[in-house]
Length: 375
Image (cartoon, rainbow, N blue to C red; front, side, top):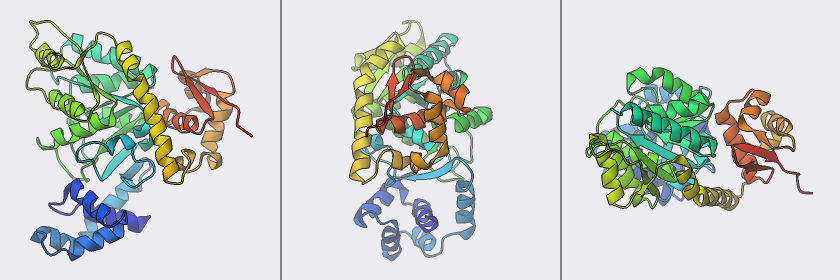
């Protein structure tokens, strides 16, 4: 595995490559990352900087990457991993790999992107908090960009009621942007996941944020926009969601509020007008079921059970403790947190895998029930 990670890191850090080029070389090498690296090293048409790096990668940089990945909860999630989120495979320019801090399995759960203005009104922030908590309680993970305003409000609202949340960022995961979200980033990594396609050491640059927006919308079954002016970056996320054939929702506002104009434009262009989170949950329910089936089929094609993607729950004492704590009567997520001592984020990931294995059923109201094992 260490050799594989080194090969991935070398390709991902090759100057001028980008994630699309890594995917192309991986496909040409039939999924063999070492063969992909060897082909790149033999290519004579690359720029001097790329050829120099491939000929002699910076050992200190690679050592720093490996040290970061060795920390608990840190991972490089590669597109040929069994648990790479299948919803990203259908988007334009899918990432080849994602750096993850936190619970990577959460990326497999049904998600809703909640985005909007960085300078939101108090009413807009309250709306973001309400939608995040209701949707979270209905089984949808809130995914956003950890920016000021609507993004931060949605993340914090989920965490406030012990629900997981996912932040997709436009920097390396050793950088927190904006800086004032240091505490929020720590909370998200502990209870949810922070995700980036950019290597460590990547600083905030304007062009990175539209790139990360395609991952926010791509991971999510739908994108909800709450307060946005006509120049808001959240309109880019909404456009990308529409191009990815995902649902786009917009909350209307007063005609006198400049931050409502972007939402009104989206509605005129075909976005669904929503006034309550339950509307979003009802519309996305069938897509959430389809995502679970797609994941199951993907793992079966790979010759693995859903449980195998977790490392094998039958040999994992935490899964055994969860099943014992669950019993055969319906239990609310809050009760399971208390019984197991696990975070809601970790439990959500484990429960998804057990549900796909046919051992757990999810019920309305964020409740779960253990099912008898066949045979």
